[in-house]
Length: 246
Ligand code: NAP
Image (cartoon, rainbow, N blue to C red; front, side, top):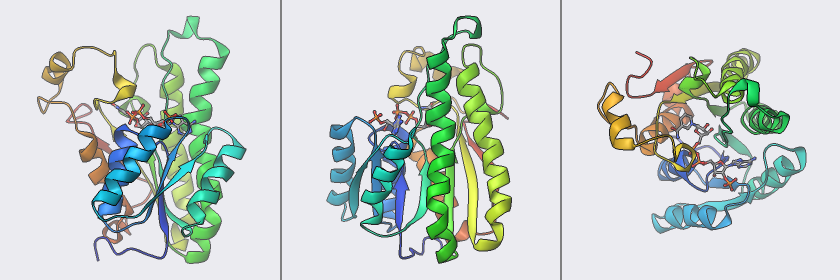
């Protein structure tokens, strides 16, 4: 019952590397055909597809910028060529950190449009088919920075906190339709996004568990929310953060 696969595809946005790649690989291992979305890193996305196929899974490239309507349509056209999207992982994200007093309009807009607008309009696009199927799973990748502050990340924090609110209200709208909407809040994971944040050996020492969280550990939590076992869990935020928010 844990990972019964429906007649659908799992779409993971931003799956060309990092947490998105780990989620795509994990969902494929659970039996889902996976649509690997990316915006520009075609090589990385092809590597994700190759990783899945080499383990006997099924994957398709789904290029598209989730921060705009055309990009979302492009992404769904590729994914729906396989099957309706019944699992959606809103993972694509960017950060453009700077102090609020110095923040340029485009630094604010870019982060909100990708991390928050992207998740909303991608979810909206997926809902019709999920409602017809009377089954769906939406997993939003927020951040511990959506739950607590971080100087230099007002744009990112606002987008990630917005995702928490989106998760809870959307969960209530679709709860009776067999669709769950949940969020994962990762702590610190070593990826391209966190490059330059500091020395990871030093950062590991500040973590309650004494190490950095692995992308595969975020992926495991995403796969749980996507499973049948999580059918009664909706509107929740699960921190996979090594104890950062304990
Ligand atoms: P990453 O390695 O930089 O990967 C980001 C992914 O998002 C890439 O595949 C990138 O593809 C894609 N992407 C960016 N903008 C996009 C757009 N407009 N449309 C489609 N795809 C887009 O980052 P990550 O660390 O794995 O982060 C994944 C998610 O986890 C993000 O939402 C991030 O905020 C969240 N998170 C990460 C951490 C952490 O410590 N790493 C902590 C908390 C939350 P292209 O390069 O092709 O654009």
